[in-house]
Every structure is written in C-alpha cells, then in structure tokens.
Image (tube, rainbow, N blue to C red; front, side):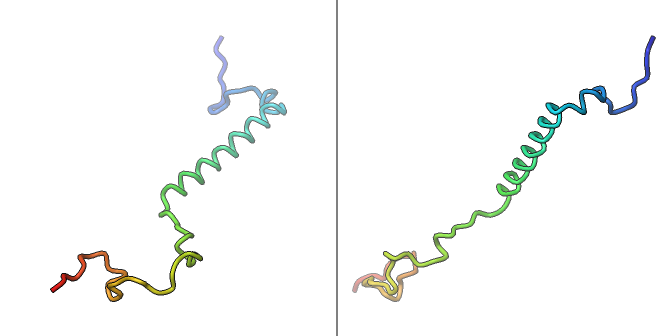
Length: 80
C-alpha cells in the first residue's frame, strides 16, 4: 500500500525535534551566513588601510634630484 506524504517532508517529526538535529541545523545556518559574507567580501574592492596614514619612515618632502617629477613615473628629463 502506498501512503501519501506531504510535499517537502523528508524526516519524521520525532527526528526534527531532537537536540542533535537542532545543533546540526544551527551549524549549517552559521556556516551559510559565514560563507555568504566571504562571497560578498570577494566581490568588493580591496581596501589598503596602510596607505591612509603616513608611515613614520616616509619623508614629508621629496629628496629627489628631480623634485618637480617626484610623483611622476614617466621618463626622466634628458641631460643637455
């Protein structure tokens, strides 16, 4: 004889009310939230907090022999 089972019911109610099942479902929920947060973090651009503040070993002024081109990464001026 075939019995009709409501759609979506996989385990009997006695199993769903045990402490082991509650612990397992809590672990799965926390794990899902954690991996969702990691996936969203991978989508966001990276932050570089080290560049927000001046390092103590970084000069306040350039000491280059080409002070006008200190921030320029292009070619240096030619000598005459």
